[in-house]
Image (cartoon, rainbow, N blue to C red; front, top):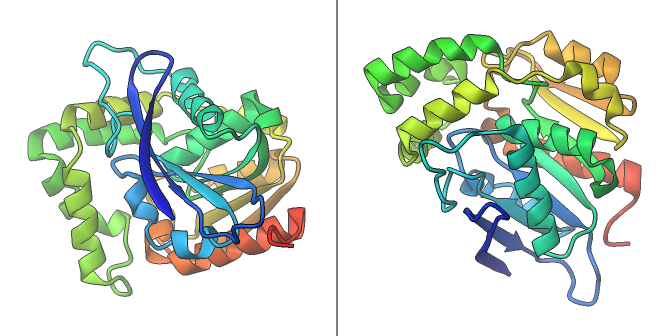
Length: 273
């Protein structure tokens, strides 16, 4: 069963989410929260749901300003604390005192910060293509996006995100269509804010068993940040997808799901047992 729902965050903004639960009806499965990347929405996980929702109650949130969630007013201050609070309030809304947090790219920023600041709420943590902060060089994108437009900029730089030799062209076009549905002004604000955030010094505070899946040919984040995660997160498992650019969560969805399920089963046992 999949449900499209929403809740009102404590600052009054409407946040959209979905619940996907195809577990056996006589069981009480753990909750798994999915957080998507910048310029995307929870629909980007369409191919992840069949594998995950058979084992977990999967809750997908549209980050504020993305998807069906409300866009903050142009004068509203962006803060990591607020983004993280949205995740915590979502968990409260669905009655999950604890959950596995699984996230892609910018969604992984929220996931990491939640694990750092609210460790009691996070069972297991898995991030895909997500470093401890967006590379400040992303600020260089903003004048180009303003000059060219979001879709032309992404089209011109699409090889930073997808391996065009192995990716279905339809997926690339769907990605461009999805990103075009965003408010360009908010996208610029979101990217600009995230490019000012960095928390590598806080990584040792992550207590949850952590899986980091990363692209060997990282082109959006800072590649050496994965070495920092390997060195500083206490209980970390690193899996590299060699040679791939940033969007491995889209290009290699089935492998991501298999690796995440294997990791969570190894650390927490079979959720269906």
